[in-house]
Image (cartoon, rainbow, N blue to C red; front, side, top):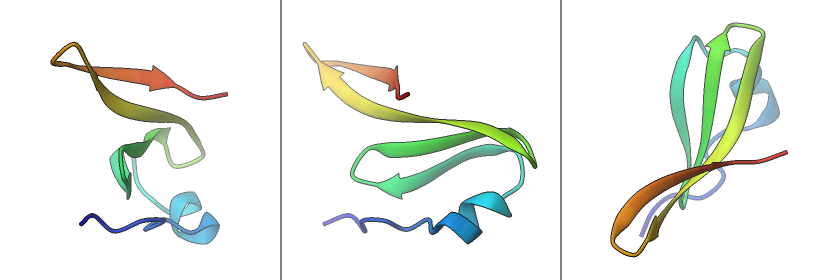
Amino acid sequence: MTKRHALSALTAKNLEAGKHADGEGLWLFKYDKSAGKWFIRLMINGKRREMGLG
């Protein structure tokens, strides 16, 4: 079983650039220290897809 809600607001704010998992398919992609976007990874017809949120 995967860990859920691994990133708190403060943790997410202080992360460096890159992809960071929050658990159960939810990811945070940080462009730089101050900007980023949330997306979810899921399987559709056997292929991995990433869908942006917001």
